[in-house]
Length: 400
Image 1 (cartoon, rainbow, N blue to C red):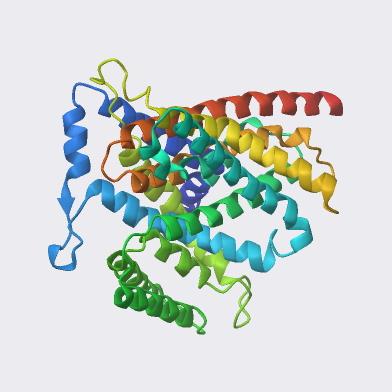
Image 2: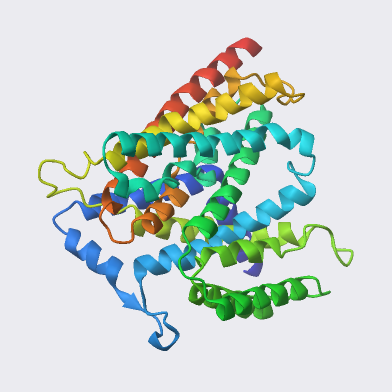
């Protein structure tokens, strides 16, 4: 019986962590939220999102939507932090020369959307929306890799590696943006306590044994103090991820980054991200009268930033650095091959929705910003899927 249970758990884990599955769970959760939020029962969705739970004495009496954005999403950022640590120490970011092109492409892919966003909102006379400049700069790793896995079968593996490296750096830059530009008043004592908890977490992980019953309370304490400090609490997840050793310790068969990523990813992909998508994507558009929400300049700015800005930034930067600097693309890749990758980076979704909430806490532009993220993501994903299918078909015919 125990063997059958273990086998079932392995199968479920493989299914949940598959790139195609994680992407479909995100899409499904967002679709359910969007339909419910625009149905005759939309007040029930709003009531569920605003339902408050948690200990008031610790200032953690938060709404379910806030718990999803600040709490569950910290688990996703922990996995991102672990991946970043692994890539920097032993992965695609270890060799600066090999990583240089996708790293610079990620930077260009964030700068161009921010500039286009700023240009659009200024030209259309909505300076109050400028605080959302970072919304179209982020890329959703899970969603983008899922589209590539489904529609890009048969394409060179170097394409996935390039996208993964670019998206990982993109996430790192997005984390820095959130920490620097979307942090209000910083309270030093709680921040120091959070950093001390991260240090304790690192010490435990470097011991011969790192029991989960010791790691989880320390991680929760780090999150709690980070939340109280004024710095967005998901940063605690990133720091905890960076604290995990990426090299083999105590003669173990694999690094602890791989072990913890293997343990936490099912929860992140199967629960944390879909629940966040459910509460973040429920944008109510009915009753908007003459469509005023969709006609806001911020909507056009975000869609243009995601669909055009990311594409131009990634491909333009890649073209410049490979022609003007002694850098080159991986063997077997041409600039044309990166066209669908540029479109895939326009899939903002998770982090873009989070930044939309942080950018407009008063709600004045939040609905339009979230709607724009969904529109831009759908357009980018659709265009990328069509192009990937075309390229995959052409690659298959060339082998015949």
